Length: 88
Image (tube, rainbow, N blue to C red; front, side, top):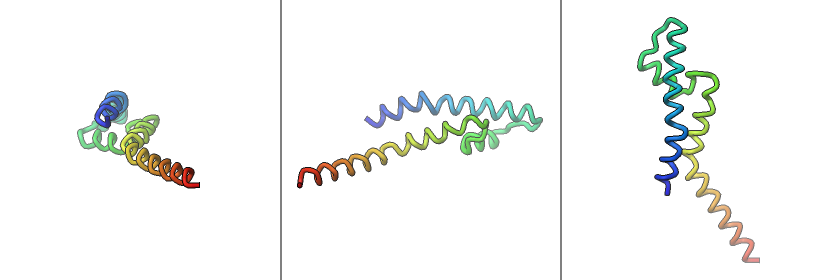
């Protein structure tokens, strides 16, 4: 089920990403002397630039979101390949 798939990934990926993005945005704001307001934190979360090593979280989230599309394309190609193979 897709709901189970996404619920599991939400806990495993999105929750730590949001938490650490907020923490890093606050720390970077504190370190630079520019307070991190809500708009800066949201921007850091959306753009994935709260810390340099957090880039892979956004890539992983995008892959999880695209997984149903990728899976359907794969299954359709696999079905066509099987149909072609059996018609010979």
